Length: 334
Image (cartoon, rainbow, N blue to C red; front, side, top):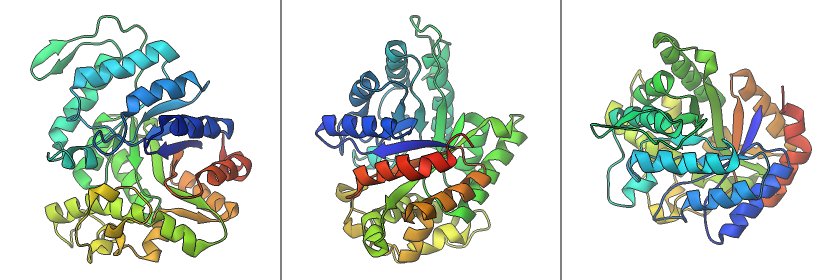
């Protein structure tokens, strides 16, 4: 199993670079950041510094979207980083939640997202692609490589990930939901004539190593609110009780009253009162290192290839170090 670290690009950028360097020293192979231009600093600028100050770390957004930047700009940015640092990027992509809504726009449609996945990958790898009805190619790309992993929750999005993407990003660590969603993605891949086992499966969720579970829950409760934004979209589309979406995902947002993006992804988010301790425990990894190892082994048995640690809490350094000392050695390479 591979491991990644997920950060927000809060200033100073040097702190983000420092934490990514720390993660690499502790055996993490991926460095991810949020990508929302209004809320945080521009991640692609910071990726250049991270890549310069690490040796093997692969970097990318969790997640970008096809609306914030034009597709050729996104592809050229990845291709430039790859040319400079040797194909050490990955494109996590989705419809766009905070990035689009904070700027007053609606998230992208799945149809547009599907087109963007192929076009961005083709352009970044030097092939011709159709962008807004025009055929274009980036002529200077040589031997470029850009895996594109798609974030999804709902049935149509899961199907699209299986049909188009190189990997699937699931932003929660609930075992039942992971099994259901991974199964849906792989079934869609097989139906599309693709090798379902060729897709990389990445689960991303907060991890907090420590003995005080009550404190850890409060530090990670924001995550249920973030996931709740996507779940609310699913409920609006499919209804509160649908055979297409498990109630294990939708029922917890019954008391949700809305969401304030100024607190997005932050400890103490006041828009997360509806998130119970049970949901925090299901969606996150908390407790002593052995508890993390046990849950990660269960996720690995469900086909998860990478666990990406959301480190938006007050124990970032100690959690990174605990993973390096106790957790990664128990799972890496197995």
